[in-house]
Image (cartoon, one colour):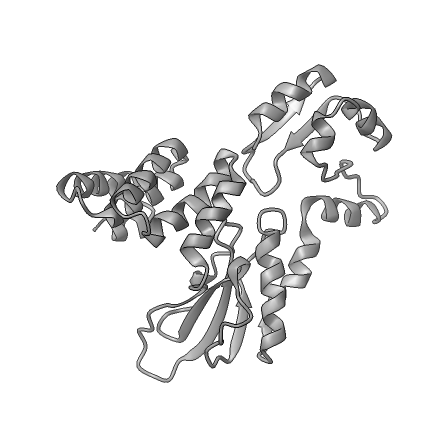
Length: 267
């Protein structure tokens, strides 16, 4: 019931179900992971982390809990730890088949995804009654992993800023297939915010904000303000962590004096 409610977008009702499930099944880590997944949708990141860590206290090798932390921790500013959990969850298991519910011979598809988000909701287009989908966690793709017979490759990774490593892995996978590819990962890699701003700036009549990806080390160094001026920036300045949307981790700085505090607040 919790899963049905979550799929229908009824997150509050799903939360009620999963909280009850956790209380009734204290030793089952999957209920904790299900609860955490809904909490993540509700942006309750710290509470979601508690549930995932509780699941690992019950079973330290429970892959779904490690997968949840791999997705969640970048949002809490801990990408290194996220990578370690991702390796436990997906290394050696980067290929997972989804359920086929049709009666006729299916069209078999490799669906390339990122474990850290930035994926297009491709399941809205690939019906389980027509397509047999094999999900490939692209950042953990091992070239020694044999690919199942397939007729099509669909790259569902759509965010170059959030999922650069996954797009690189997806590009490597294409060397091992001759099937047609929808949404080539190499093309997606060229669509980060900074790259798009540069492309738009070349079109007459279009005004774009000066945009650049800047390493945190430069912004925390003693010459940060001088470097920004040399790059053509002035205050007020918009600063954001890459790979987030909807105003998340996105700050306006009126003066250079606000830069250190802003960096402390951004993952």
